Image (cartoon, rainbow, N blue to C red):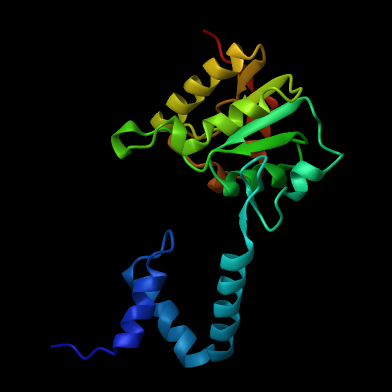
Length: 200
């Protein structure tokens, strides 16, 4: 039977919960922290605790924030005519990095997936609809170009049109099956610039 240290195994299992971290990567990280990076362990633990205690969701756009209303929603420099809907906070960061979009956001924190029990109520659609009555002219649907992302975009487009607003979809410079946070800035910038209206 292989020799194991329970505390190390617990650390490995905790690290495996992170996206993209498999068992071997988690074990390498655990040993690196324990062998050479002991001071970093305290910093990491403190940062995790601080984030857990202070970060929640913006009451307006649902993005991650350390204040009731996030800095993007409070900014007077954003274009009040544009609202961009994305699936995750990482997607907001990816779009902001392009420097080509200056409107507001709404973060769904996922996408419609009936097979997984994720319906409109799980995505805060009531809060999204409340935003639609705040003077926007165009709603850019920037959900991922996956089957679930496309279904979510079509569902949201119907809601947007019911409120008398223009619904557009980011252009497909983004690869099908890809996720926005992994797309390079040039492709994402081009996709945003070439967005198109969603037709009935």
